[in-house]
Structure formats: structure tokens, C-alpha cells
Length: 608
Image (cartoon, rainbow, N blue to C red; front, top):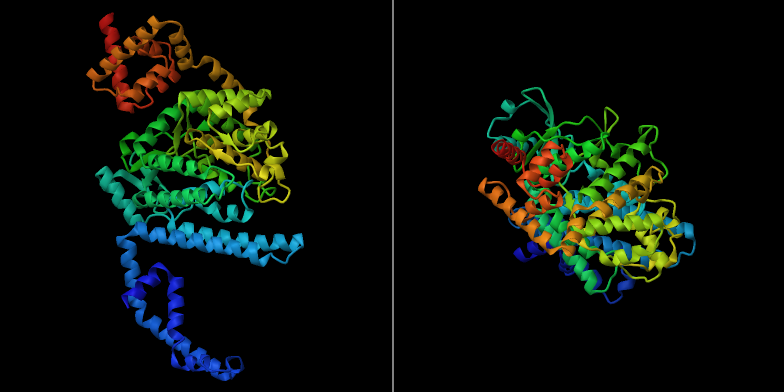
């Protein structure tokens, strides 16, 4: 009996087949089947046999229901990773079989294009509902993938985008009892002693955490972000499952139009960083200050440091509504009546700010889906959720700046730059490469290919067979940001070109990069190289003696900001070089930064 319980839990379809085989020897039906003239059997005998089978199936199912339910519950609790793995493959098999049936059976005799489109529309609707049901049940990493799908209004079937739009900020939340326990454990104080008001219903619930509005005892309105520990534990299994499927497709030589394996590898590295709330708090402070200084119309919530822990992030509450409220993902039917009249101007400023983050700072918010972009009550744009911040290498940042310049000027240098970025395409045609480069790294919508989905029958045949063979992990998040903006612009029928908005930033970054100028000087003058290294060594020693961060990444930030000594820090403070100081102290928390600046002032006083 245990054998059948295990089979039903792991493979319900196989269980039904075995049960049917068992019932075929049940006497009333066996007599009918065993007759020599089976095709001429009496209909009433067959009906009697089938009804007896039905009663027998109910009896067998009823006897074992409690045992099966207990086994399923124990299996799910004791081996959640294995349980989710089986659930994932069950969903994948069902979805594949459904599309295979439509491709090879349902459409085999249909020549009418209208009927063919109707069949595929029905299948997409079925597949989208099945996918949504599976994703909401499994949650975890699958929800992160669904967020990407939900933002691709211009690339995927409309049914999938519509069904999965709920996962942007409306995922199943944690119960209030667990939220209260987490807050009280981490802050070591009863909830009512910290907050005068605390909403039981979250204002947003996503894959990593959920956010509750609250009012502190001092009267400050705040947003409290509580980490979902359960999702942290299961995401590792989800990533391994999807990587296994991705690598299996590679081995079977089932090639998709993009490099899915490297994309999943990048997500496997980035998603764990979203659970690091200390890192997110630092990014809110550093990027937020830099964005506010250069783009006053963009608001970033300020963290409330004394109410932040490893699992809780408290920040100033921004009142408004997310951009997803205004985006109707059915292209061509955007809710313009509800959207602000200057929405195009606001989105242009937002896109420009991402050029500044990517090409000048080298660190950027890599998840700007419509649920993470808000229009505040004051009419400004607000950017929230800095858990997924990507930090680019200096090499990649400079190459991206040169790529923007090439795409803007229309030169053929873009092909060599793509090679240096290790973005590999399956075509050598320069014009096709140019088109793909614009789709990947620009938001322009004035080329026909940008307005068509690969599922569209009018999609150019020469592009159907083109594959992106390799997308480096360092570049993928940039492509994802462009793809999200492209999806939003397509939904609102906007044509905003990233390369035109980013060209000044790209030229400035390509010419005045501190690190680039250092490298050129180092090549020309070996003695200056020695001097720079000695300065950095002395700064490193000073930081270490004062118990301040001084590992490799901190020293790289000082070098990038062209701050190589204590005297340079002092000079930057005197001259109000806030941007250089933000870059230099990127990995310092507020207390470490303030202590360092106080020590610098003391050092100045001693010199005087």
C-alpha cells in the first residue's frame, strides 16, 4: 500500500494508470472485456461494469485519502526542496504537452490563418493561467522570473503578460503574526512601543519581502520592509531546477533566441544580494543622495537607520501610486486618462537617470519594473526597492559608454565593442547586428523590429533564426533594464531613445574617467605609478589603525574617486565634492563615514 501512496504523491498520472489497471481485473468489467465478441457487447453490461468501476475507485480513494494527505504533508514539510522540484517538473511537463498538442495535433489540418490564430490564442490563454497558478503556488525564484515576463509587453504573448502582471507587487503575503514576531525579535522591543500605528495589510508584497506602512512614536510616516525568510530558503532549489533545465536544453541542442544559461547564472548571483538588507540600506543612502543631487525630480526613500536590521529595512514613506497602476499591458490601450499629463517627460528624466547610474556611477538599480517606480502625490517620480543593485566593472562601464556613442553616431565600431563585451550573435551581417544592438542597448521604437513580438507573423524572417549565443553576466542586467523600459514605452506608445538621452553622459564618462586617466598616466610614467601605490598604502594603513573598512573593494572606491590620501579626503570636504565622497565611501555605513570625517578634521586641526 505504501508503494501506491508514494507513487500517487510523486506521479499522480502514473498512479491513475496503475489504479485503472487494477480495476480492469474487477469482475463486472473483466467479464465484459473478456467476451469474445467485445465490439458487439451489450451496452447495458458495459455501463454496469463502468459504474461498478467508479464505485470501486471511490472506495479505494476514500480508504487511502487520509494516508495520502498525511504523506503529502510530511513530504512537503520534511523535504520542501524535493517537493517543489517535483511540482516544477510536473508543471513543465504539462505545459510542454499542451503546446505540443496544439502544434502537432490541433493545427495539423487548419489552413485558415484566423482559425490558426484563434487556436494559438486559446492555448496561450490556457498556458498563461497554468503558469500563473504554478508560480503563485511555488513562489520563490519563479516569481522573480515572472516579474521579467510581466514587463515584456513587446516580446511575449499578451495573455502571459496580462496574467502575470499581478506578481509585480501583489504576491501572497506573510501572516501578520509572523511579521510581528520578526519585528519584535529583530528590534528587541514590543511592536506597540516602536510604532504608534502599524498596518496589518501590506502595501506591497513581492518575492523577497513585504512592506507595511507605519507611524513611529515620534510621528514619522515610514515604510517597513520585512524579509520573507521562507523564500530565502527555497530559492536555492528553484535556481538549481531552472539551471538544470537550461543546461539540459543546451545539451539537447534546443536553442532559444537568447543565452538563458548565463542569464540564470547572473540571477543566481544577484538574487541572494536582495536578502542583504544592510547592503540595500547603503545603496539607498549612496545612490539616493547622488540621484537627488543630479535629478531633483527623482525621489529615493531615506532609510531610518535605528529601525534597520538584517531582516528589517525601515525608510521614509513615499505617498503615491506605482506606475503599474497606469500601465495597461495590452499595447495600444494604455490608461492615458489616469496617467499624469507630463508622464513622458517624467519617464525621460527617469531613463536619463539610469544612464547616469550605469555610465557614470557604475552602479544602478537593476529592477525598475512598473511596481518599483512610483508617481508621488507631489507629481515627482520615486524609485523604490534598491535590493537589486548591480555594480559594473570599470572595463564594462567604459565599453558601454563607447557603445552608446557608436550607436548615437551611427559608426560601425559597435560591432567591435560588442565583441569586447563578449556579446556573441549568430550572424555576421552588420546591419542585423546593428538592429539587435539597438534592441538590446537602446529604447528606440522607430525601427519595425522594435514594435513586433517574435510571436507576430510579420516578424522579419531574417531575425527569426538569429540567436544571442552569449550574454555575459556583467552585461545582462543592463539589457534587462533596457528591456523593462522598452516594455513600458511600448505600453504607452512612446518613442524615447536612450542613446540620445545618454550621449552627453557617455562622452563625459569616456573622456573624464578618473580610473582611465590614472591608467594612461601609469603607462607613461612609472614613478607616478609607484607614488600612487604608496599613497594608497598609507591611506590603507591609516584606515586600518582607526578600525575603518580598508579591504580591496573600499580601496578601489577611493582610487576611483581620485582620493588617495587623508589630505585628499580633507580637500574633498573643503571643496564640497559630494559626489567624489559618495563614491569613495560607497561601502561605509553612516557611522563609519562620520567617524572617518571626524578623524580627518582632527588631523587637520593637528596640522594647523
